Length: 299
Length: 286
View 1 (cartoon, chains in turn green, red):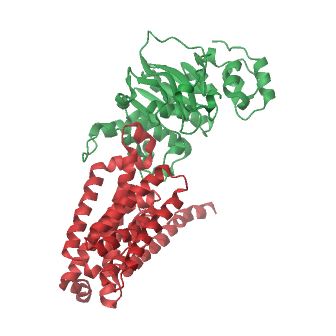
View 2 (cartoon, rainbow over the protein chains, first blue to last red; view 1 turned 90 degrees about the vertical axis):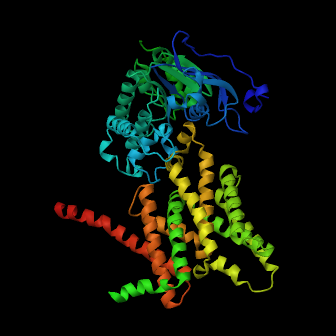
View 3 (spheres, each protein chain N blue to C red; view 1 turned 180 degrees about the vertical axis):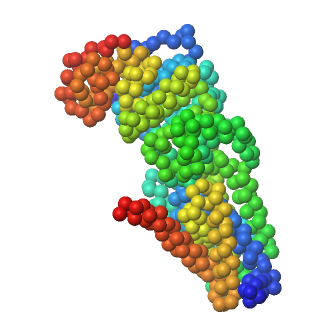
C-alpha cells in the first residue's frame, strides 16, 4: 500500500523534502505553515507535508498546475477544511486568533455574482469584523471602502450590481474588499485566471503597491512571469512543495518540469524563466526540450 | 371618487375583514423579506417543500387535539433542518433529496388524516387558506413569528448578505456560514407558518416568490428588493381581498392571481425598457 491510498494519518509516509527551503529564522513571518496535510474525506490527501513561509512584507508566488492542491492549501490555512496534520500560524499566532489580520480572495467562481449586492456593499464586507449587530457602518468604514474602490479604479461603478461587471472588474472588486479589510496578510487564489494581459498587468501593479506598503501576500497563479517579476519568493507546489526560494533560483526548467509534469509546454526558450516556460496542456517533447535547455536564468 | 373610497373602505366595517387585512400585512412584510433570499438563492423548491411538510404537523396536531399552528411550526422547522442537512451532505442530488423529504412529510399528513372519516372544514382552511377565518390568536402567533424574523434579519443583515454572496470568505472571517444557511431555511419555515392560515399550504410559496421576483426587476440590491416586494405583496393582497369580497370568490387564489398579474405587467414593462434605450442610437447610426 502506498502513501497515496492510505487515508489514515498514522500510515502516511512523509517523503523527504527536496526543495530549496530558505531560512527565515531571523525575519518575522506573516505566515508559517509546517508539515500541512489536508484533503477531502475518502480521497488521498490533496497536499502532503507542505511547509511555506511568507515573510512579513513580502510577496510569495504559489505556482502549480490545476489539481496541485493550491486551493486546498488556502482552505486548510484558513481552517475552511480541517487539516489532517500540521500547524499554521499567522504573525506568530494560530490563524483562528489572527483572522482580522488576514484577507482571503477566493477564486472568482466561488462567489455568487447573481446575488443582488452592489459593488460598494461587497467592499464593505471586508469591514464586517468591525461591526456590532444593529449598528450602521461608521464613517471610517465607508471612507476606507471608497478609498479601496478608488485604488482599483472602480469608483464609478460603486452603485452597480456586481453581476453587471466584467471579469476583470470582478477581480478588482474582490481585491478592493481585501484592501478595505486593512489586513496585513493577503491570500489570493488565482486572481488572474481568465484575464487578458492588460487587465492582469493592472492588477499586478496594485499588488506591487500593496507589497511596497508592507503587506504580505501569498498569491496562487499560473502566471510565471508575474512570479518572476513581482514576487520576492516562489513556491512550486504539486501535492508537496517541489521547491521554494527566490524566483530566479526556483523557476528553473528542472523544477518546473517536476512541478507541472505533462502539463508543461515549452515555448521559445528565452533565457529568462518567465518567458521560457508556459504551463499548459503540452506534450512530452516540450518537456524534454525544456529540460535540455534548462539553465537557471540570471538573477 | 366617493365610490372608490367606499369600495375600498366598506369591507372593513366587519371585524373579520380588518383581521384579514392585518394578517395579509404581516404575510406581505415577512414574505417579501424571506422571499428576497428564496428567489435570489434558488430556494423556491425548498419553500414549497417546507409549505407542504407542514401538513404532517397540522394533521398530527389536529388528530391529537393540539395546537395546529404549533404542529405546523414544528414540522416546518424540522423539515428546514432536514433540508439544510441534505444540502450539506446528500449523496443524491439536492433536488431529489428535497423531493423525497417533501412528499414523505406530505404523505404523513394525508395518512394521518385518512383515519378520520368526518369532514373537517378547519383542516381544509390550512390546505387552501381561509383568510376570513383568521382569529385573534392566529394574529398574535403570526406577529410573534414575524417579530422574530424582523429582529433576526435586522441584527444580522450584513452577515446574511456576506454568507449569501461569498460563503468561503464568510467562514474565513469567522462568520458561521453553515449556521446562517440553516437560519435562512428556518426563516422560510417561519414565513410559511405565518402565511398558511391566510393563504393555505398549496399557495403559500407564491407569497414568497412572486413579490420578491417582481421586485427583482426594479431593484438590484437586497434591501430595496425587500421593500419593493412588500409594496407589491400588499397591493396584491388588498386587491385580491376586495375581489374576493365583491365577487364572492376565495381570497387566497384571488391574491395570488393578482400578484401574478402584477408580475406579468412588470415583465412587459422591463422588457420594453431596453429597446427604448437602444433605439435613438440606432437612428443616429442611420
